[in-house]
Structures are given as structure tokens and as C-alpha cells.
Image 1 (cartoon, helix red, strand yellow):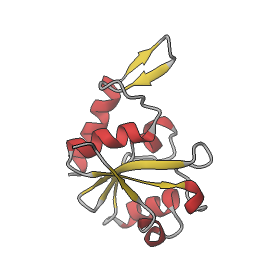
Image 2 (cartoon, one colour):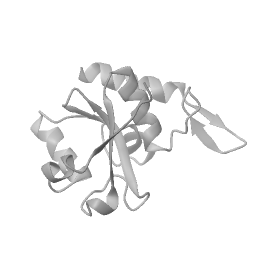
Image 3 (spheres, rainbow, N blue to C red):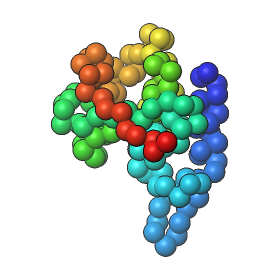
Length: 132
């Protein structure tokens, strides 16, 4: 699954286009690459996952999304994979776009980026409708 998720991120990167008038990069579906929810929705839809997110003010230890914006969204796949195009490609916060929470090293990255206690943050995540 990791390979499929990473390949999809590479596809999103390859397909993005730059709009000179607005000065913004867009995904193929015309949503802005710089908005975390846009990438999260594309990944979640493709892999039948969910978009999860949090408000940074609800967890002051998070690095992803704060202080740049008030919160952050990412794709949550199969109750195991955190897929975060924005943290990987837009901000460079994450050295990889896909985190497998069953992997100790990936779990450590997730703890570092999203909370000092993932369990605390799990309860604060909200699921965003994909409009199915």
C-alpha cells in the first residue's frame, strides 16, 4: 500500500499546473495545491479513506499547520496511513508524504509533526465529508 500511496502523490505532483494570473499552483481538479484539504481530499477519495484534521489551537504541540494556518488536514487511509501532501510538498515539514503508523520510525515522525501524544490528538481529529 505504501508504494501505491507514494505513486499517487508523485502523480499529483506531476499533474499540477501553475496559474500565472493568480500566482497559484493547482491540482488537475482546479483546487489549490497550497490548501492542505485539497491534497487530502484527492488522496482520500482515490483510496476510499477519510480527510482528518484538527485545529492547531486544540493541540499546541502540533507542528503541521501551526503557526502558518489555524489547522491542518490530511488523508487517513485504512486506519493506518497518514498521507500528507501539504506537509511534504508545500512546507517541506515532512521528509516523506506517507507515514505508516505501524512502523516505529514513521510513528515517531507522526508524533513529532502532529502531537506530542498521538492518542490525545486522535480524539481531536474530525472527519470531513468527501461529498459522496
